[in-house]
Length: 297
Image (cartoon, rainbow, N blue to C red; front, side, top):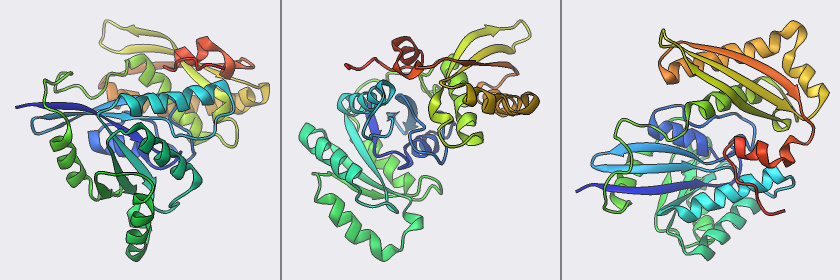
């Protein structure tokens, strides 16, 4: 008897959703940085656990949106939660019960969707503080189960995976067992470049940039030639990303290429181009290019 179901990972920015997805699947599928709001669209990770296929959906962090891009990100997060068989509310145990967590828990409760509470980063909190925090959070919504984990260290994840395998509905698998994600290679390439922008630049630069794969060509020798454009909102951001003598953009490209070669298991020729495009975060075409639906204004 096989089982298969969608499990949405929702939470406030920086709760560790992408780290959890990557750790559970054992692959770098969702980009990670110490900065909030790194994930911009839903990422599917396919986890096999015994006879169960668990389809994990990493969603953007839920926050108060300002731009059209922000609204699209938050809409993608709630669509992911509402379409799933089960939602995991991931809470940073160090941050505790914030206003954002209260708001998300309240909406989950209102939807009636089956939800589990997953306290993350428990390795960073004194054990005596965990039970009161769990009681406080459990009062916010009708969580069917509660788990305490460290996505970064791997603590508690085997128990979580075993329970997920038992909880997803009976049914046929929707994807081949050796697949890890449904993300196209083109989108993975763009995301790994964007991750390096988050890791190697500061302040508003990562939030003012978007990345699109313009060309992805399979070469006869088995390698891939990939051309990627980085759009930035301001001329100053373009100068920072290019760096003195092009040093910064070369370093971004080199590190992204190494990650891509590991993920795609082949040689990659990666070419980056940086263009200034004011207002890209309000353009429908740019939002669609990164996998987001244009929200109502």
